Picture 1 (cartoon, one colour):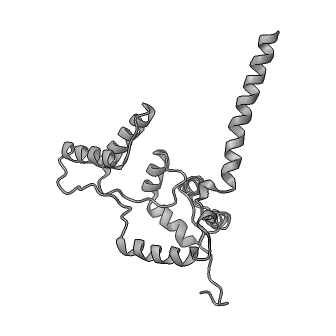
Picture 2: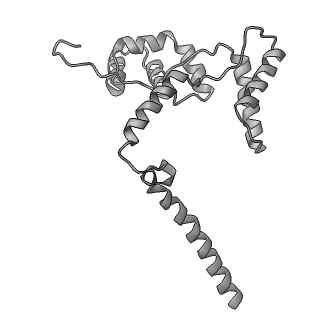
Picture 3: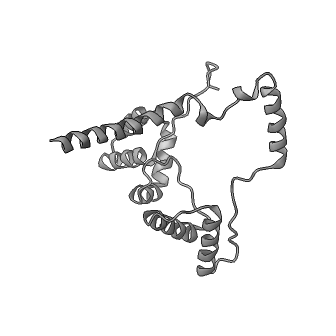
Length: 185
């Protein structure tokens, strides 16, 4: 908290803005007022900008590799494997090959073997813990107790699904009508 009892708002700046700020600082290296200008424009402190200057090479590298919208630069523990897996994934999706979790984990294991990494073990990050499932089942039961089964539905059965169903039908009807009018002529 600051002296007035208000929390300081944190402004997260993406890599692109950091890079632009560094370029502006390079152009006016000796102009201290430029640092203040950049701080004011991006709503950050001077210590933040000095941190960017310390990590300039990392920011420039990340910017040039295409990570412009990221806010933080995180080092990958298994960078070779993850980059190879990402390239494989993009190629497979371009070929319209269906991919699921076990296929990705198998391919990751193959890449780990190829790169001779003995520590790498593929796993699913989104684990489901039975305690949380049991807790949710008791909670949902108390929520739906006052409703009849016909009044309980999934989100895809609700109001918005009707919006999605009408548009393709209209497009099909329009195409049929234009085809019929062309056949008559």
